[in-house]
Each structure stands twice: as C-alpha cells, then as structure tokens.
Image (cartoon, rainbow, N blue to C red):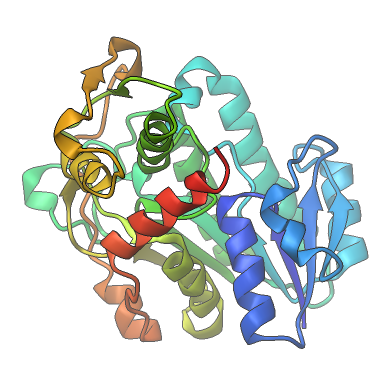
Length: 320
C-alpha cells in the first residue's frame, strides 16, 4: 500500500505519518517537502518515510510527483493554514491552497487506477454561523469570513467537482479546531502554552492574547489524523464529513486551563490583550456536529482536552 502525504513535515502530517507507520507497518509512505521545510517534526521517522521535493503550486512538479509515487491513497494536508496570515497574504493563501488541490486532482485522474484522495478542508468554511445553525452539520451554508476560509471552500468544491465529473474517489473532511504536540507557535493553544513556558523560565513577564470570547470546538490532533484514515477506509467517496468533538469551549477557558497547569502561582500569571491579535473579522462560534462521520466510520474522540493541553505544554517545556 503506497500512501502519499503532502505536508508530511507539518503538524497534522507528521502525526498522520506516525499513526500509519504504527498501525499499518506494511504501508509505504511518501511525503512531500520543500527545500526550506523544517524537519523537526519527522526527525524520529527518518528512514521510514520517502521524501520527495515538490512544489505543489507547480503543475508539472505535482504531476511528476504523482507519476513517480503512484499512490493508492493521497492525504492532501499541505496548506497555508494560519488564518491571520491569510489577511496579510490573501493571494499566497489562495494560490497555495487552491492550485495545489487542483494540480493534485488533475494528476490523480491521469493514473489508470485513480487513488483515493482525502482533502483536509476546514470548519472555517462555515464562517458566519447563525445560532440556529448550531451545532453545525455538513448542510450548513458556507459563509467564509477570511481568505483562508474562502480558499478552503474552493478546495472543498474542487473535490466535489472532480468526484462528480471524473469519479475520483475524493473524501472531504472538515476538521474543526485541533491541537496538540507539534502545533505551530502561532496557533492559539500552542501560543498560550509557549508563552506560559517562557514565563516559567523567566523569558517573559506576561501572556499576550487576542479575542478571548470566540468559542471553538477542539479535538486532539491524534484523534483527527485517525479520523483522516478512517474517512478513506470507511467513508463514502464524494461526501463531506465534519470532524469535531461537539463541544464548544471559549478561548478564555483554554487560557485558564493552560494557566492552571503552570509551575507558577496561577494568580500571579499576568495576561494582557494585544490589539494586533484581533482579526478584521472573526468567526464568533464554531461547534461541530460529526454524527454523520461517526455513523459512517465508528470514529469517536478518545483523548480528553486536558490531556491534550498537558502534552502541548510538555512539548514546549522540552524545547524552550
């Protein structure tokens, strides 16, 4: 079984590679990298993943990758995935996320036996959610509020179109917020955890925050990548599936949970709001209904949020 993971050196990509190698040792994993790709997340997998340098924004490079790899399954995780960056670099976000998906699907349909393709879409596609929409099902209108959300809608719809037009077995997973060890330092849970550890080690005096009123649905990344695998294993091609815990947590509660795990006196941890961390428009609440996916695959969350946060803090304690 040949499995291609785009963005294998990233947060979810590295966890997915680890999951597959641990549970399906017969699988041959091919991963895409760029010359500047940080290798820290997959250093422990060295020699177990075949890495191919590819620019997924280039059609010929992507076609060469697919022709060479001849994958049976493609997990497309490579993306510009930080929502705030999409405000400062909307063109790059659209180009990276949309063209990479288009070129992968185009290359996949040239193979005699088209591979299964999982597209890592996003809950950010739902955007401006109304109270009556909660919890969010796959039937909820897509009203993206960021260039990132728009790029993910386009990716999602390309997957639908290529399934309908060319019968490429595409599985569209709309994962809600996920976090855990290896999460990039710019993402909210990881950023709070990093700042806390820096305070513990005397490298900063306060935690800087943005909008604490937003409500998000958090799942551990290790549960999410297991869901990605189950989507292509047990899901129905052409379908969109929410991956979510079904529980909304205010960002301020995440901050309080992280502070409660501090080696400092929690009462002495200073928090200040930074106006630069406020987005031009923010999605106020995202709570997902993943009952469709659970029914199709039997997937369920296994790792509690508190365990996720503890592992995330420990990850940074080992690196700061």
